[in-house]
Image (cartoon, rainbow, N blue to C red; front, side, top):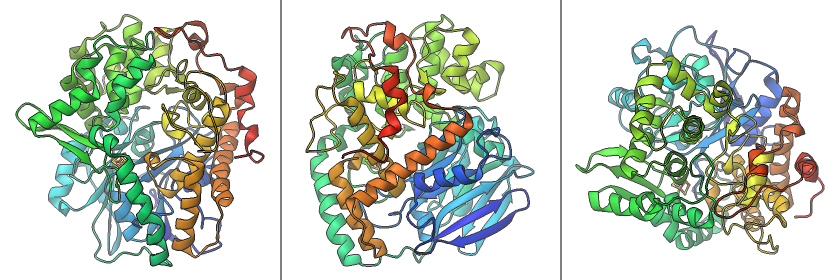
Length: 576
Ligand code: SF4
């Protein structure tokens, strides 16, 4: 596998092979993006200036048949948090990059005008594309598919990325060909836009460069694991993440009305069950895989009453933060918001939190879906001053309105879990080097990090610092493999992963070695943030979570500030 370094200014390309024993050998995806950012990006640089780099990296198991292993990490210094950032995405292109023998692409400096990069069996080509300027992802992908065929893989930005909005995403096309998958968090689309890079297009290759040292041994590890995931996740596959809507509301932890409440009276109108009914009755699709090798298949495809595609995949966090959080109780509107965000290249989580702050400050009426749709389709699409207000995230809009209730940590909007109720998730939000990011240690209901430990009740503080820590370490491991975290960030699965890596690369790793990979990634990220000025003082949630009781659970956030500051002292001396 190779690392491809592209100087966008000179168009010089250097290809470095990753050899056994080299410093990059056991680094993949997030492990690789974070190491390169740490080594090469000046911590205090302008995230949208030419010193920042954008890294697109595959995981250590990319291209193999290991379940759910075809995700790409996108990394750089975040314009949203000003710290290190990795956001990962499913879709087609990861597998295609792997087949071309590419582990990572490092993008440096800036193109003189808007281009895309075409990767085919002959190499890398820079294609000028001013005619694609400001195109939404949907139209862009259609045009690229017309030109290069419908089997291509695409990473791209929409107009929000070109405008360098801090909520902008990097999109990837899914297996149905729609630009529905997004490396959404942290504004990395803006970094791509700052480099004048509209897209990376990868053509299919007949032969794969992926090598598995001992395929029989590899199958003995991956096949039973895949079978057990496919069997145990059947309900999740049927309903996907939206099945959490009702559960979160009944726990009292569903962000409602800018986190003023935790339960939504109209939940039945926007529940996972309601979505399921709409999708199946109109001829939409369920149980879709967002990327090759996924055996869980939790994605959906939503169509309108005439059976036309609206969006895919409508997820829990999008529905919660743009539904209950804004008091919008119409699934068709939520599907339209999701479509527009995907088209523009805007993070649905950050947008929902941003609009919630605006409504809380009386700038939009609660539940006014028409205005919300107009802000996306008119204001953000045309980069108006109102569009800029809503495209730069919750912290930015909170500062403009001098708001006192802004659900964000380290500059990033809090995802769809009330941290007063879901205690371990509240630790992850406070401590993750990525800002408030549920994917970096998702302590959702019922998730234990180890079968041999007891983490206590969901809504109690007991053992939640440890639960969040373990989940964050194991998730960093999964992120470095390119695996979707739905396969389970757990102590037990670290053994399976060690065995898979041993079979793939002829190694002799133990579980503890794999756990060390996760610890090292986090240490690197924390060090970068420290140098960027984001130290342990930033490990906290907004004060209103400590002052206002959640409704109806009457819970507040009570973790000691000192415990949050010292949280990462566990690294290197923790008993798993
Ligand atoms: S489980 Fe869901 S999110 Fe994960 S790879 Fe499969 S379809 Fe994508």
